[in-house]
Image (cartoon, rainbow over all chains, first blue to last red; front, top):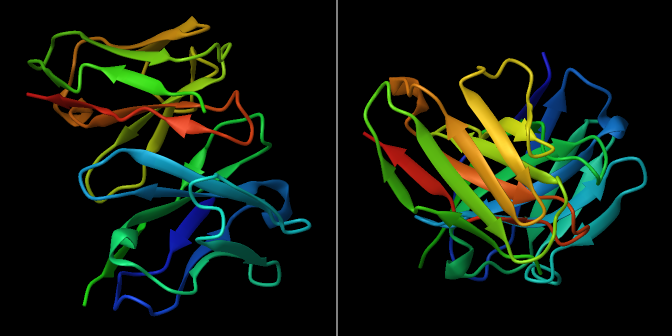
Length: 119
Length: 107
């Protein structure tokens, strides 16, 4: 069964760093791009950007460029979303989702990782 | 950036009725428009891609139509399992993909 399984809830303080994961299984990791999508409390979905596991080519939405970093570990078939210094405004649910190519839409999603940033 | 405007924000319907959801794009997106269903605590689920193609395993009660800037998701004969939030997504403008703000379908 093809799955994207995300890491669990994170509670952090402002200024702390964080890396959350999206662990994939049931398909060839290199054959799909991985996207990250944010959903702030009570709000809609926001596309953050995309990374290609084959060569780690990453594209960021302008709103998120410089704020987060995408990475992958091909040996683990996992993708990561990382912050170096969290803000309270980063409190949100974060989803990973895959696409076959940048001309396709998301065909499989992770269950989401809640991130809470509070002092 | 292409802005997607969904209407209405909330749609109140009864089981068995038809629901019609709208998604309007600020610029032409061709048929690169998808619809997703979201329920609390669950991963969003792809319903429709290419504006009108049902995803694998999706009931024929869900249908999508439109092209260019105006799109519609129709849910015929609503079941209790259909009450959820529905999002549209354009994947025409790479790499500036965007979502609508969502429509909540409630009883």
